[in-house]
Amino acid sequence: MPSFRTARAAEDVRRELTDIMRSLKDPRVHEQGMLSIVNIELANDYSHCKVYVSSMEGLEKAVDAVKGLTSASGHIRREIGQRLRLRKTPQFHFVADNGIEYSAAMGEKMRSLGLLEDTAEETRETDEQED
Image 1 (cartoon, rainbow, N blue to C red):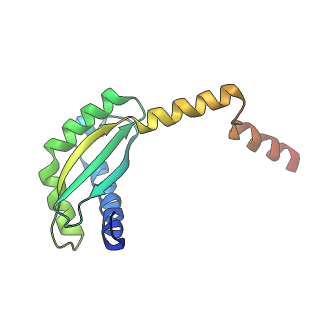
Image 2: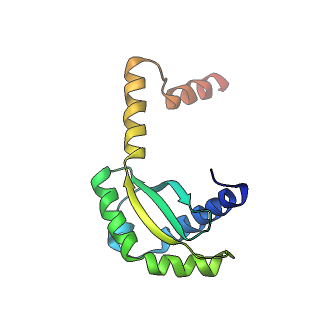
């Protein structure tokens, strides 16, 4: 179980990693549409960091993005080291995940069963009632 300090450092790494991913020029990362960091597991000694990456377009696009992120891991590590004051700069291990795709599919199934209402329709109805 990560300590409070490790959890806080992992959240800082996630924030900076999101910013760094936006600035990468590798087409495998840049052209994957909506790319998201699902989870980060930072070791207690900050030596390793496992980053779970998901893409809205599916697992295949996430795998391509992971290849690009892995090739840029040296640059990412250097940037994290410059931006954050950590005891050690972790080595990054990127893993493709289908979390976003799975969540979207579950939401669609819940809508089709009537368990989840469309929020866009609710917003339109409340706007019409205010007028």
